[in-house]
Image (tube, rainbow, N blue to C red; front, side):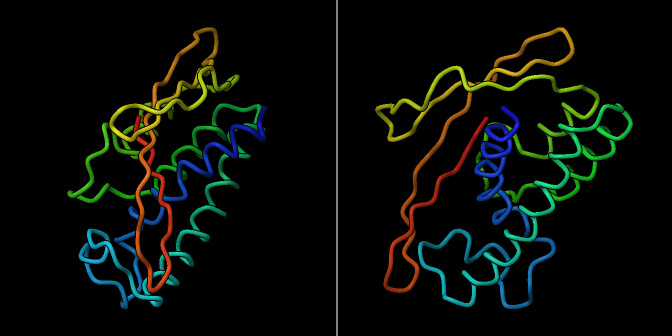
Length: 166
């Protein structure tokens, strides 16, 4: 179950990490302009991939600490560090809730079990909806999420980009 949760979180953050790593971006990346365009240069793609891989590696390390730690203080510290990985969301994003806000809501809670209760189902708007259930201490919560599929042209190839919203 922990591997499933880590896989889900990795997918969740993989695209958010690229979009939200703007404050620590390399000089080659222009401020927000390339993120709103449909075409990216190879240098921009490589810069985003490098930064996203770094953030994903850090995120996985922190998530393992959260899931494996028996002490609440270690879990809280790991969640705070995880939250710091993803700075304030750019103004142009339109997610229902930013990652930083969501992580801020769960920093004081102890995650016990995570399960996907409804698989992704397509909607008429080209989105996919799903449901995730998790347990915090003795309380069970359900989180609805939406996934959107975008096609981006990078050089001569097209790449499928998935964005996840809570």
